[in-house]
Image (cartoon, rainbow, N blue to C red):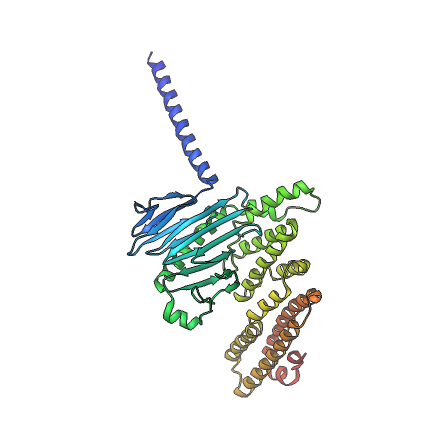
Length: 440
């Protein structure tokens, strides 16, 4: 009898353990497939649909919901389904007009309207051509694609921290607002950066959001690191012999995984950035013409990223993709990008730094140092002439033009290396007899 009771007890305990396991599993599983966006208070006070809620009380966000923060030291965060965020500062009031994310991440439709004070948004996703992420204020709206930006209605400004937004004013005119180019939300005129920093910038809000964004990136990169093996498999996927139906299925599979990498920069781990470019290239090969044009614009920012941060891994792959898809993007926009990157200034600074290091190592005389600087300035002049010549190229010569960019980079690096190596053996000889490399 005792044995029977013991068996029955063990059976009950076993059932309980199964139930607990199922509950935990289902909880975890539901969390992973959750397609909802959420809102919660992280400091101060707030209202959801005019009902006061508690600190760290997280609520699902629905269309037509209105969120309002309190008047003192208040911050509320909206966690969109795709890990993008919008943070509301004190005295901020907004309404959700649209909030939809498809299971495959190929459709993103978000619209919200701000009535007062200030928001900071970090849009992490790649937004497909037929999708949108918009913020409305007064009679204007901002269209966003993978951007960090802030709107302050109290001080009347829009500021883009990185990439760009498209601002539609009350007359329907579209204004492209690029990073570090603040613009008035009242007059729609651009504001000088110095005036913005000295007179308008909400320094506390900027500082707080940059700290929170760094924490968010760290969490996301840790999650990505766990998924590297699965992502690597997609990079090596052969797409040459797929049927039309297979292309549609594979495209969605690649897209949903690429979205996890979209926010990665060259400032992050090299492996992740290279993987991001590999998957984006796969998307380019699988996508429709309209999506190719949208992706090409996204590659512009990757190109800018590697030059700005002086980390040239994936340089050849990015330029190769642009060459192969030249019909899908605006040539003038690419030339404007080259100009904005200040390529010649970067080359000049890079060479001067190398020569400064040489000077310290080999005690170069002042006279020789002056001659070297003259050679660098001459090289810079040649580089400027090259940029001007590039700007005059027409669209049907784009492939040749971009190849010149690649060749110029490779030749420049090779010549700089040769110069520095020969300088170690005989610096005087390099300056007096081997100056052809700056005049070639």
